[in-house]
Length: 278
Image (cartoon, rainbow, N blue to C red; front, side, top):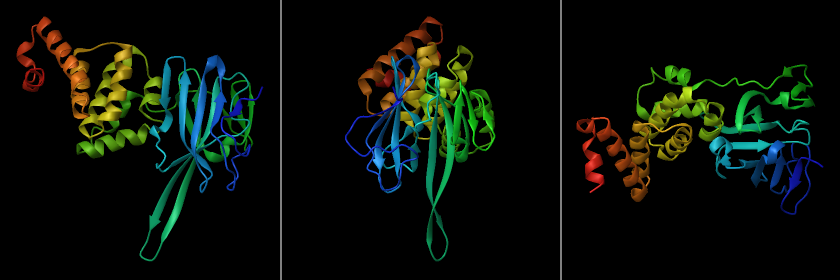
């Protein structure tokens, strides 16, 4: 059975979808009931705008995409490895170059490897690497490069170190998101060990400081699934409060206050906690 399955009637487009093709939503099936769901086809650019990873209780969007984003996505009939453990996704970043006389549309193309067990984007190469064939779980590109599944993205602690000199909360959050091009959930899936809990929590905090409470919450939720921390309760509460989810925020403020009281640190609880739990 093919790994590619179309959900909605439309022309079947197999190889790096032709520009005039009316493509349907598509599912790329992997091992263990994992799958990538491609949707929101952009006819002009011949790309999908959204891809969701799903496996058991995991369900999240790769690349934090929305229909009007500047990112486009593509796959072909050879994208999934024969064992269903890895998939290649072609990612295009659309942009514009402005000069004094005209605006020129630009694009940068990449080939990303996704681990189908977790939704982790392991690595990224130039787009031409997506042309090739699988030999087990190893990709042999037509240009000669051999790509083995290996986590190559910057780890959370090194990411924090790399942004330490960035001044301004918005710029710092932008710098984090640039490194997390695969999306918060995918990045956290790559670094789900307990040794990364503190650094991931800090990255979520920096996202919140930069105004991205939605991204911060997604990070906090992944950290929460690894292990609870007192400061995490406060961070979750603040981002919930900032996004208008005040009832749930109050529950986390109370969990934070109770934990601080138990550890004899009630005098260090910020005044906003009491104000928001009245």
